[in-house]
Amino acid sequence: MEKVDKLMVAVDFSEFSLRSVAYAAGLSSRIKAELILVNVINQRDIEAIRNAALYHSAISVQGYVQDQTDMRTAELHALADRGGASALPCRFVVRSGVPFTELLAAVTEFDVDLLVMGTKGRSNLADVIMGSTAEKMFRRCPVPLLSIRPDHRT
Image (tube, rainbow, N blue to C red; front, side, top):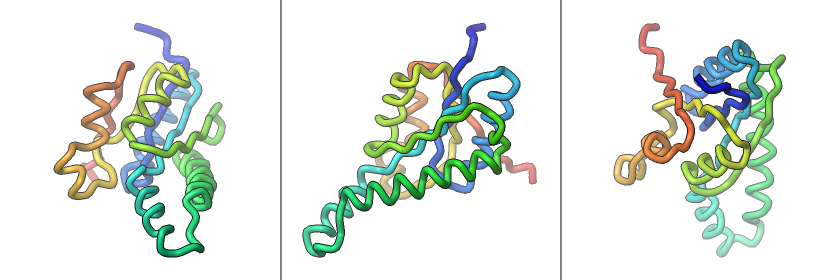
């Protein structure tokens, strides 16, 4: 088995995110791996803000992305604390773009050895038509991907 030095967890802030982070934190603690929490501001949301900015001069795409980045970084820190990762070496990353594309880029950029992500997240009709981020990651991820399923036992 290959050594896992960097473990990345994809976080979408859905109700399933805490379970994924907690699992990844426990695993990271046991194998002494750096934990990287990554969230992606969806390009669809940025485009919606860009369109709204055409009609409202008070709206700024750059301001929206910066506000979201700051808020999501704070949320990643809080989620790491709640998930038991506060004592672990962690990195917190917020990117913007197409979620699966940005996650794949982060895997390569940070030289990740294992990706952890939930199979459920914040989905909508577009995901049903075009496929979920998890499904795209399963097909394209260049490193092993650990799937965390929702806990239906409780």
